[in-house]
Amino acid sequence: MAEPRIPFRVPPMLATLGSEPFHRPGFVYEEKYDGYRILAYKEGRRVTLLTRNLKDRTADFPEVAHAVGTLRVPTLLLDGEIAIFDKNGVSHFQLLQRREEGQGDGAAQYAVFDCLYVRGRDLRSSPLAERRRALEAEVPDAPPLLLARRLADDGFVAFAEARRRGLEGLIAKDAASPYVAGTRSPAWRKVKVRAEEEFVIAGFTRPEGSRQHFGALLVGAWDHGKLRYAGKVGTGFTTRTLDELSRRFRTLVRDTSPFDEPVRERGVTWLEPELAAQIGFTEMTGDGKLRHPTYLGLREDKSAREVEWPAATSGGRGPQTAKRRSSDREAALFRPRSAVGSPRGRGAGFPPGRRPTPPRSSRSRPRAPDP
Image (cartoon, rainbow, N blue to C red; front, side, top):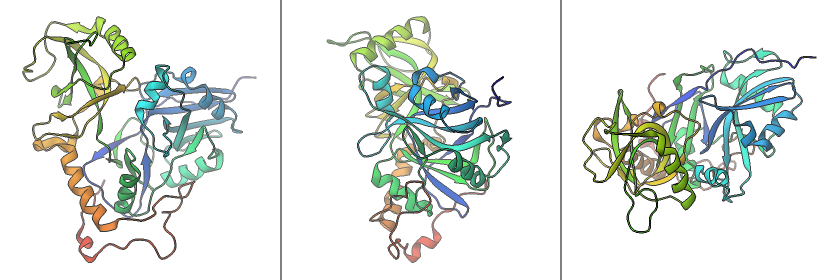
């Protein structure tokens, strides 16, 4: 007997980047996870884990594939993030990289936040609230499967909670929105807490001292079709990382700079801009350069052409400058003592009568523009 099939393969729905926290009625606020975006297709006993650029990662995360395969549902399509969490329950992309380099033994978990197809029914046109109910009906909240955590009902309180816990950020979603595959939709908006972004690797400097292979990476991002320079990254590499990157670079060497602007560095080897990397940093300067950047790992799940210059830096303002001003203001307003959501994410986590109340001045706080 032939296995049941899901009649389509789709790229994931993407979120727009917000520069500041906000609150809007009808939106829900979820943890933002720092891992690989994965669509899980269950067709009978067969499970396929695909990244957003359609790479098959099933063999890389057998524990996740097995857990999805044991669910008692003939057809199921889930959207979520595979991540590894530290002892405080916070995900870090670096932990995934260490596992893939054979230097870490952290357990991968699949944080699932959407259900696109179930039992022969296509849910993409259904509102998010209905898709979430279908998700909770079919997927247990038990490792290595994890239902994406909902934060507080108020967007500003949710951001303060994410900041207090050291999360990468939050995702604000319109509970009435359909799932629009392959689209960066204003119905989903990500607001980051940690300063991490994807950048394109477009060159490297020669090594100095005892360093092998290269000294620093030259990185940037696409800004209206042109590759804009963001600076060089010289820390965060292990010996194995240096070896692996050097091997990947050999087939990408080119004679000229791919950047749109002059880059005044000596001893540079230019590369075709085909690799994307996750970079941590403290902030971006007014002219868009990274301060204290560190390499976190390659983004195998994303095409380098997808890496766009952060919208929040338009006009020369670094994204973290804007976010820091806003987050400090909102954290001062709310300062929740205990804002951890329930395990299945249905409540804000405040004891009765203890939900923080904003002062009167917060009535004029900014609202998100209409989608």
